[in-house]
Image (cartoon, rainbow, N blue to C red; front, side):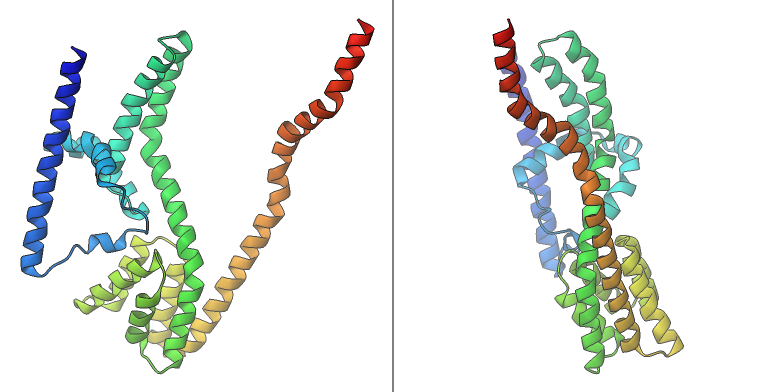
Length: 291
């Protein structure tokens, strides 16, 4: 019975894998004939492409769900996938695997003990919350990476403007030289403007795709400087100086909080171990002499 069930699961898995690869190959051939490429992959942060086999296993529950049930079950994950740069199939698959497989693995690991049966619902609840936890962590990393890359990008814009470029040319040059993950977002805005979208609409979409307050401030400063006729170089110089001052202040605050964060491990972990290593042998020897 066990071997029959395993063979059935493997059969379904390889059927889904083969159908997906055939569909992907057909879409790639159609895009190649039309001269198009997959633009959505350009917005993904570096290191996001997982191995194909692992990604297929993660997305298997979503692929096996009927199409009419995907929207009611996984519709809430759309709002999580866009800002964090994730995909709905991967978030849904992770949620299903952790919600169903986590409690089962815990019960089997504890051999159906009382503790395992009590902790299984807790594990399932954490699995249900896993998409929100993963998305928030991914978005926090994305925002931090964009903040690190933004001062250098502002300096490149400043250099292009000083070199005599207009705003579109300077933005296009800075987008081509900006590091990841900021570069793909800027290039996406450049492609939108090349397709006829106005600069304000492209910048608003960019601020929505990459929800970083500093980036939105930079885009707003560029639009206001052009609308009011102010010097673009002066605006970029002020913005670059301010964002570097903000980052320096943030680093100072983080350094000031470091001793407080180290206090708990020091008191509850390092100090007891040090006391046991120093006083413990003497205390044991004293007990042996007394008794």
